[in-house]
Amino acid sequence: MAWVYILECSDGSYYVGSTRNMESRLWQHQEGRGGAYTSQRLPVRLVYACEFARVADAWGVERKLHGWSRAKREALIRGDFAALPNLSRNREARGPREQDE
Image (tube, rainbow, N blue to C red):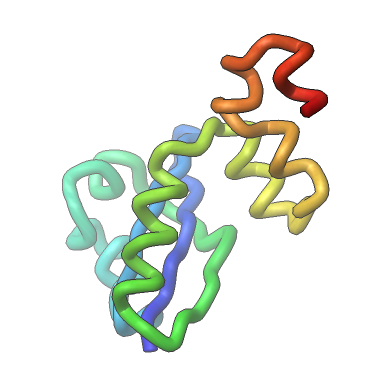
């Protein structure tokens, strides 16, 4: 089993990660041992987590989330799945005609 997670840092930024042991990894982040980014932005708060059967799947979703805008990550955190397609950066980059096709 593996997890993808999003932490909200003390400065309001988001950190996206993946792990095999959510409890241990969250503890590491909260203790300042989870990595340079979060250690400079304590405390952190877990705002989203999703479990996967395969590590490769969790890692793949983590990679995707790194490319998402703040607004799209916040929609995921809220569980507003209907909003996700409209928040896609690719959709924003296309012209109005292409979006409707």
